[in-house]
Image 1 (cartoon, rainbow, N blue to C red):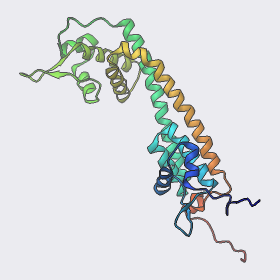
Image 2: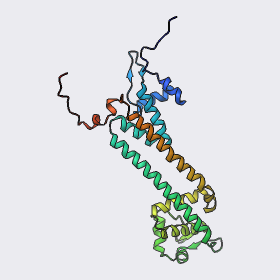
Image 3: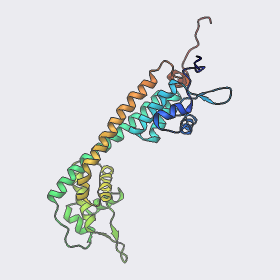
Image 4: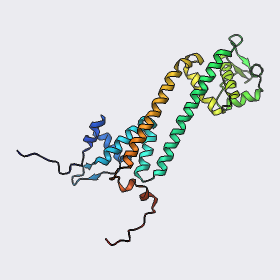
Amino acid sequence: MNATKPSNAGVRRPADLARRHGLSAQTVRNYERDGVLPPAERAPNGYRRFTETHARALHAYLALIAGHGHATGGEIMRAINRGEIETALRVIDRSHALLQRDRETLNAVEEAVTLLTATRQPAQGRGTVPISALAHRLGVRPATLRKWERAGILQPAREAATGHRVYAPDDVRDAELAHLLRRGGYRLDHIAAVLHRVRDAGGAGPLAASLGQWRERLTARGRAMLTGAARLAAYLDGDDLPISARPTAAAGRSEPDPRPR
């Protein structure tokens, strides 16, 4: 009996890498073309020849996508494959900082919604109020409300005849919530993000019901980042890492070997 053996057990086809992750072979080719996988050698017939290194790179990239998203995951892998490790680490740090900001936003929303539902008084009537009345209600100056508007916190309508700002009950709710957050020391851009969440949810009540799901998503994202970091480290620790992906290659600081060859 004659057993057929591959000419190179370490060489893999695009389909071999793709099958493990439920991808198409063309997707793997595209990843190599786009630089998220290191360059593959070509066989005499022009076919790509992938190796275990490419398999680890693909494993790392897909894990990074789960935690950081497609764009950031691709930015990280391309920097790694160019040998720009510091650049890749800065991108990772930036992504972790964004996750931390999302956690702080969630904490602010939870605190503000609790305070709002416990302390708010219904807006007077169902009509609109002028800026002077809302400023008096909150104990702030009208200039403060205009500043909040420029920051994207408030979105009052304008009277057709005069162009004066008028605040509907939902605007009053947003102003009360912003006032609570400002007293808590939150930045204006942070408050604007919170108010965006409130408006998207249809108010403080519906938002409060969705806060648990929001926290679960942030937790899943954080855990995915840990998995991505582990798989990226496994890729970087490989003895067969391509020369282009080694830090000294891009830095241009490597010295010629003085020993005779």
